[in-house]
Amino acid sequence: MGLSLLELTFVTLAIGVIAVAGSLRYADALTRHRLQAAGKAIAAEWQGLAAMARTRNQTVTITVDPAMETFTVTGVENPDGPSRPYVVNVLNRFSVGIDRSDFPTATPLSFNAFGHPNRGGSLVLKLHGSERSVTVDASQGTIQAP
Image (cartoon, rainbow, N blue to C red; front, top):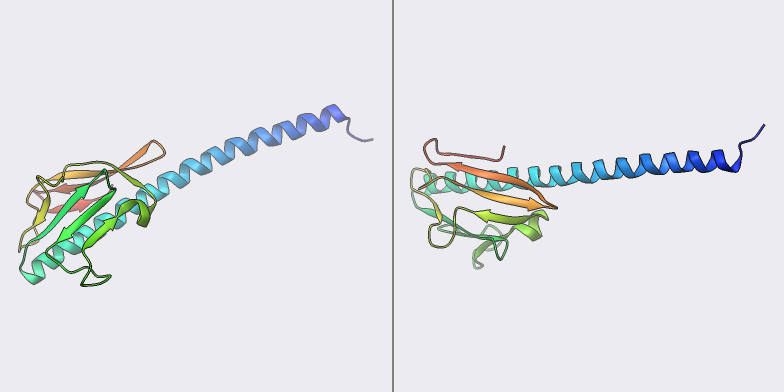
């Protein structure tokens, strides 16, 4: 006893609906993972810059440019080449964009010789309508990407 064409059509349709639902959930999970990984990597890089400020006894400054999807670091050499400016293109490196920042050119984020930030604020990353923040807490001296 075989299956009729109508039964095969319903089975194929059901498998298609399940596949579409699964692919949408996979895309959402991938977006969340990319944002989380980018946030944690930027937080780790900024923590490393704070540690450099402390060990070298000098100020390190981070200026964020959301329009260019970059942040620029002054006060330390670029690890990719000492003769090049220390500019991180967030879109190219992490495949996420910068939505907004509390550290523009007029009021950048600086770590003093003790590694403490001059002010608090956040960098908000975006991808496909989702957001993730990297938060600097000046009172605690912490950098987190929850």
